[in-house]
Length: 232
Image 1: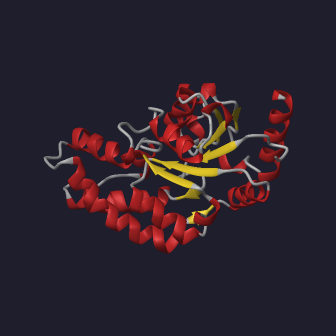
Image 2: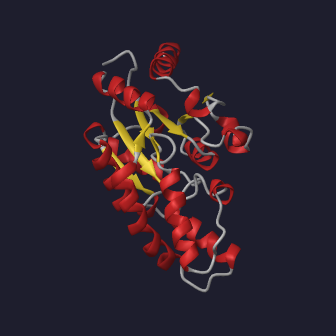
Image 3: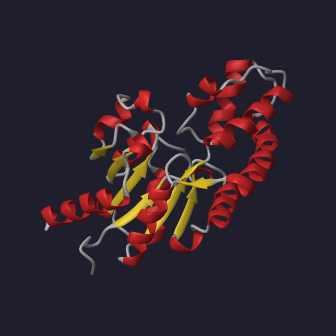
């Protein structure tokens, strides 16, 4: 067993492992324009960070008065997003290093994402992250997306890990709240720095208020090692 004990690590995908929000914004903007919403802005998009794609589509229906089922909106957006995701998804360099450090230590890892299963699969394949992960779960595979804990609990189940032995990395407040509800520790790396004071982040065990600019593979690995040592 490594210095990290029985630890398993569960990553959110979008905004945590990969900077996919610009791709999601572009796919969303094109989809909404097609349905008569011509002025969807980046500021609008930021309010949906951390919300599953299906729930985002349902919120669009309410906000813009769209007479289209949420799943129809999602079916229009997903192919656009997949095309962008395969071509230009960027893995945060320090996150890739962190994944490699954990893999070298034999730590079981999973992804638990609000994106659809096909999107998760496409990103993991395009970025080369797939082989490092023993499981990948979409919130579409559980009854409720984040902040409900189901997607994290299912990831732990697939890893064969107890929730108390899991640490979640998250960029959004609903995800941090979901980790807490699942009985897991959480490292929070806010994608939107202005949201660092959101209530969901208040329960994080480690809050990197500066987001990815503050995250380092070695620093986070050392924090995990120190935490494991204190718990023995």
